[in-house]
Length: 257
Image 1 (tube, rainbow, N blue to C red):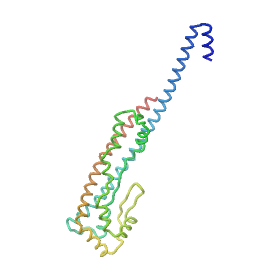
Image 2: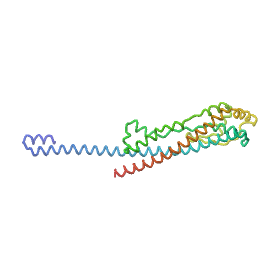
Image 3: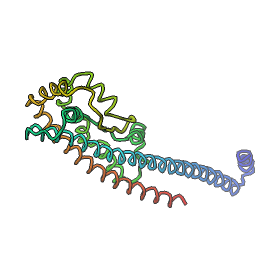
Image 4: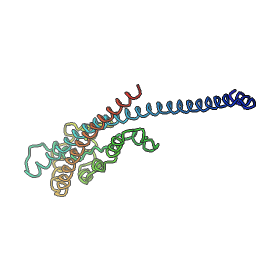
């Protein structure tokens, strides 16, 4: 319709009308582009907030896991220290089965991987720019690429060594009666002895006669302490990032209103 009217005005040499039609066309195109850009900006705003909320939820999961890991590593370390106290002092404060169980439980591990699925989704899609605050974006990247996390995946030589000495049937009993997990959290439990004292004593004598085993255990206890320090620091980082994410979400929500 605009084209037909413009053609008519040109034929009539009504240059004012031609100019007016031209302005109408330009303004219409401009408004259309602006509306399209506004809708795209609103869509990006909504997606940005959704991603920020998801990252915050991932950090909440990390914080919960950190707390569980610290508690579990402390329990494993306590078992190891009980073993070393007996070995260093030559004491008999623990019963034979309690000591054998401590040797085994001191070899437990609880590896950790940050909940980074949302951040990796943004990264692989090339959409990290949806995290608008450059400082926050950089801090999240540092959190998820922290090299110290590698130490939380360690499987110590002690673990293989001690499990090569303890009879298989005793280990199977420990797994079924002295250990529990829901797939993410592990629980180490007290349990009655599955064998007679002389049979257990034979295993204890083999364990206590290995200085290499005790050296490996000392190293493992030290590593668990370092892991705890890393996780304590990372927990605070996660809380600080959550606070920054909340502030950014509130800011963007205010801009959208």
